[in-house]
Image (cartoon, rainbow, N blue to C red):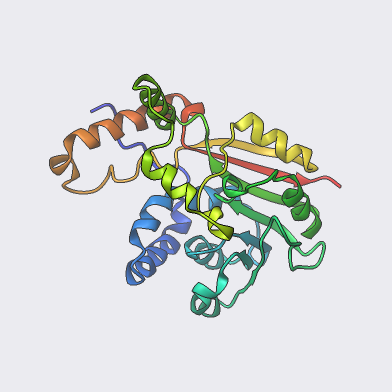
Length: 272
């Protein structure tokens, strides 16, 4: 029906073993749900890095829980990381043989020398920043070598599902935030504030922001990162038919209308 379950075009056969190994590691660590939710995002990141030779120096920002990091290492890249709390996964960083340092992007400079990396991976972090991201993006410029690139992903503000939910709350004369989300946000203090989204971006806004920081846009893409989650699971159609039908319709719609997909992906090149 509907030509359902659109294929994940980003997940290449050459990376199949890496994904299998990472999935097994996620199961052993009790983090299968996170891997299941973000698998398409990880695949899109590796696809955007296609053609980048093994050994390339990559800085990943926001590495916890380390599943994308593991994939980057498996793909042969020389990975370094930055995180608010790297100590929580120190055993994994040691196992992978990578250097992960601690810093708050909005308060501190990156603890790496200038012109060190060919790539900065900044995936699903931008939306958590409290202040303007321009100083952070300019700091990425500093640690990138001439011609280095930033790969940035963030949720799409125009995602059809999110817009539909917002419309439903508006029509019901409700706050755009549920009571639970409002209370959660009000209780956040200090660095816990970074566990929630501060703002989302459209593709035009995201490209403008990256260009303002001194990058030249090389690639921009709407990615269906979360629409397919759960659609291929055995028995789900019988146990949750309405949910599967709704998700299938959403996946089909966003396949036809790329601008309504769930995630934005942009690659920018350092030009100065």
